[in-house]
Amino acid sequence: MAKILIIDDSLTITKTLEVFLKGKGHEILTAEDGETGLSMAKKHVPDLILLDIMLPKLNGYEVCNMLKMDAAYSHIKIIMFTAKVGEDSKTMSLETGADLYMTKDLDAEVVLNKVEELLKKKK
Figure 1: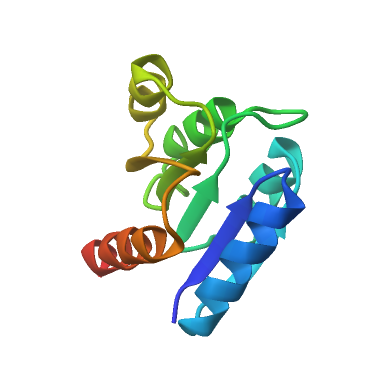
Figure 2: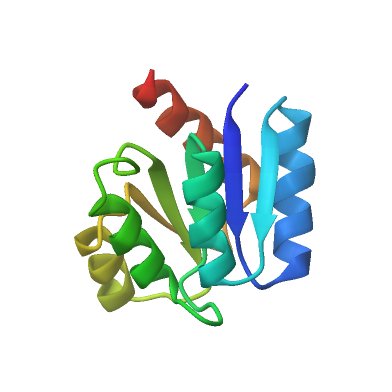
């Protein structure tokens, strides 16, 4: 069982991911904005973060960069999970330290498989 933090301002997306991931036995934490998400990541140190790019207060790039630049949190796997499509957002995500970039139009099973793959790499 892994601890997963979902940082997304879409309640629909958050609840959908939460149901699927809890069904796989994971502990789920959620935050609706980048600032809250960053403080929750530092407090709870999750195994993996599903992070939206377009967020209130701090955007996903800023949250990712701050966590990856801090040795205490740089090991946390981060999936940029966003509606923002295009090479620019993918490149920026990977440059800020994200482990994976995924768009929100993907099937839930694909997302779950990618989460499980990243968690296995962590062990």
